[in-house]
Length: 117
Image 1 (cartoon, rainbow, N blue to C red):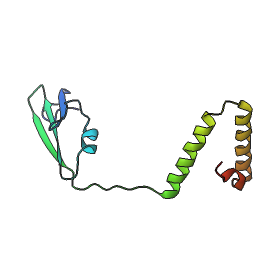
Image 2: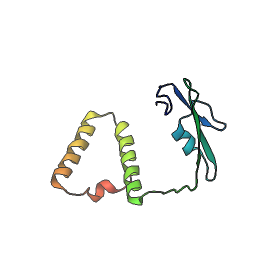
Image 3: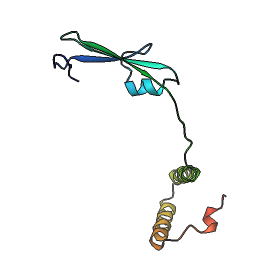
């Protein structure tokens, strides 16, 4: 970043209060609770210009996501775990072939594969 007064590139940025100087601004904002404040201090080491910006977190909105997407991701994670634990390459090849066949036909997975063991 260049200094807005002298144009030199020797501008430091620190996040505070109570955070180590190396804390990235994004991390400081994400760690801040509603109603708390983050201060971004910038200073030019050539001309002495400095600035403090006070950022207050006014509201935090949290969403839990689409249940269908969450369910799909959980099934994918479970499937990946099972496949990673499978050492027989013929079984893996068979599963891969089946999935490719289903994709090309556009059919859904048969009920026998949807059942939990």
